[in-house]
Length: 86
Image 1 (cartoon, rainbow, N blue to C red):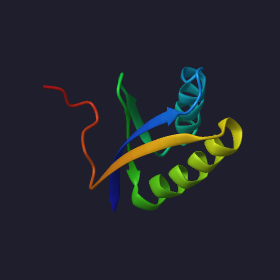
Image 2 (image 1 turned 90 degrees about the vertical axis):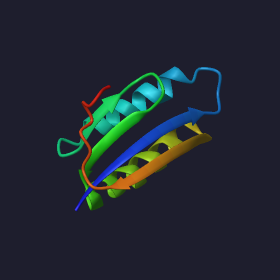
Image 3 (image 1 turned 45 degrees about the vertical axis):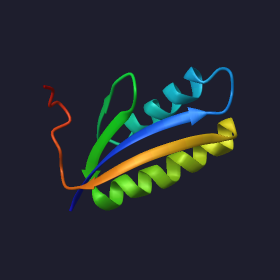
Image 4 (image 1 turned 120 degrees about the vertical axis):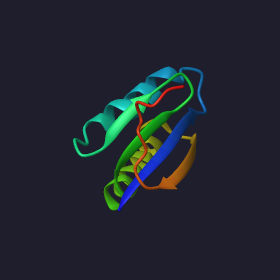
């Protein structure tokens, strides 16, 4: 089963752009997960278990490296076209 998720990271520090870019770069290292980023959030799509495992690994890594951060994630079961625009 496929899973599509939208994730926003809010590092609780002044220099918030560096941790966000670091997180996006880490997501890109997963070749089986599609990623699109805009000014507000990052959308990801892939196999359900792969997406959930990646989020668990990378959110923990972000907290360990950067300290406190808020992650807001929305999930929808199934595959969405991340290139769709209207």
